[in-house]
Structure formats: structure tokens, C-alpha cells
Length: 287
Image 1: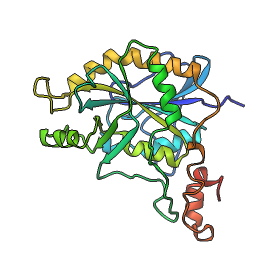
Image 2 (image 1 turned 90 degrees about the vertical axis):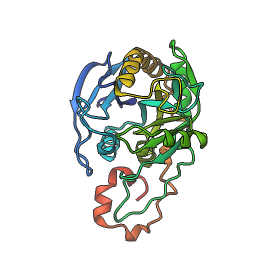
Image 3 (image 1 turned 135 degrees about the vertical axis):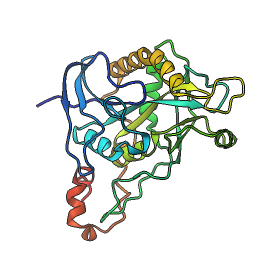
């Protein structure tokens, strides 16, 4: 029997592969929600089996709204993944979170409009708790790992997800600042919510690439600016994951692994056979 996959990395803009993975193989699990963004790369990293998924597909051909978030999370769940670290680009909405810094956010504001946010949309109703949308235990371990690198790290902050693919207007950016939001990106929602429904721990290593468009003395965000900063931070991200894998505790010290225990509201006898079959991977512990 193959050793369980200890951790999955979802790479965002600028991180399309995971250097250092050895003895790799590609898998592309079938899911009830279609195929994942790209083949999932499984290999050995620091002596542990780790999976890597390119969120935007090979060559970055999927815009943020078109990412098959449900298929991605379901596919990782089918491989036995218990923890996910998302590596994401973000803009900063505050002066002290400067380009080149890394943020481990602790809150999430979903400002998207056109995305599927749940696995449970037909024949089975679930109300999962996401008051704290990122796993606190995994986030702390991730923060500790990033602090072993040369990066400046910030613990905490609210991450707003916008629809994209366009960047913000100045009016929007300043509105988000007035709400007390720290960083802005395009993919954390619904990814974090789906991970919770799948009872997978989820944390974000957010790389600040720019000051969005609000900062009067800095260059407004552009694709070139994002890519330049992420290229500089690639080694930092890989070093941090290396330290995380080495130190990651085998036992989860959080509530993520039973997030659905009190979330299913549909009466068991009323759950349709189709929903039972489609969602068995997620609900078999409880149904």
C-alpha cells in the first residue's frame, strides 16, 4: 500500500511546478465535477509524499472564475489529502504589508459573484461552519515554516476575493481599505470553503506583489509586476514548504476533519440516491 499523501500544494500565478519533487507521477482523477485544472503531480519531497496542482492549468489558461474549484478539491480528497497549502499572489491594501512580503491570512471575505461555492447543491443540503475559514493549526505551522526563510512574514489579516479577471478600480480598492481588509486576490474563495466541506485543512501563503491601485506613490498593479515579484519569491515558497513538510505534525489538532458532523440538515431518508452516489466520498462517514 502506498504511503498516504501528507500535504497538497495548490500553486497559483507564477508557481506552476514544485521544484524538488522526486519520483513523480501524474494523475488526473475523475470527479463528479469534471476534471481538475491540470494533472496532479505526486512525488516525494523531504521524505514525504506530496501532491502539487497548478490551479490555473498548464500554461495558465484558466481565468480565476473558470478554475474548476470543486473538481480540484474533490480530486485531492480522493487521493487522501488531509492538508492543503495554497500559494497565492495578492495585492496589499495596507502600507505595512509591502511587496515581497508574505501574509498568512486568518480571515476571508468573498466578493465573487459567479462561482459554485459548495459541493452540496442538489438533493443534499449542508450548512458548514466557516467562521474561521483557514485552519488555525495548519496556518500556524505554515507561518513557522515561512519564518525559517529570509522573507518578511505577517501573521493575520483579512483576504478579500474578487471576481476578476480584471484588477480593481481605485474606488473599489479604497472601499476595501475602508472596510479594514488587508490583502486582495482572486482565488481564495470558494477554495477555502470547499476544502472545509471536504474536511481538509487549508491555509494560504499569500505573496504580496503590489499595492493594488490605491497607493498614490507606487506603480499600480500589472501582470508584469505580479510575475516579477513571484519569480523572486519562488525559492522562498519552496524553502518554506520544505521546512513545513519536515516539521508537519502527523496528527491534526483542529476541527477540520469533522466539519460536516453537525452540518448536514437534510433528513437521511430524504437524501436522493443520486446525491448519495455523487457525494459519497464526502459524506460516507455520516450517512
